[in-house]
Length: 98
Image 1 (tube, rainbow, N blue to C red):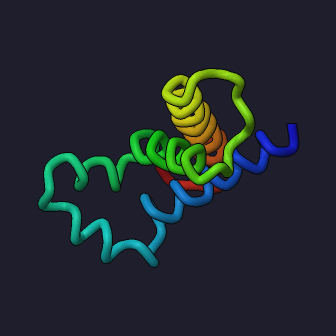
Image 2 (cartoon, rainbow, N blue to C red):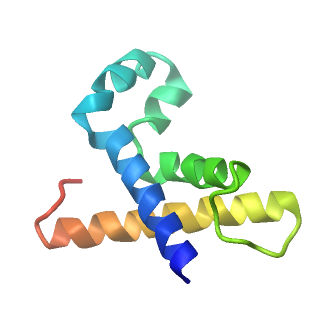
């Protein structure tokens, strides 16, 4: 359970920093002209899928007893769903802008 919470929070943190943080504004500006990447780098729900899959490939995700592709997709979906829930909850509390 602790590993899952750490996974979710780290996915949210990376996703939030890359999609909204001033430190990565240069990257968003650089990728803006590229159609798919320009969209994905600004979309928290989209980028969090890639972050979850990336964490799985790096071995930083919870252990899922399934084939590789199913586990990778599951980590991407867990990351995307939990990041979206956290963003909406924080927005409704007035702590985060969407």
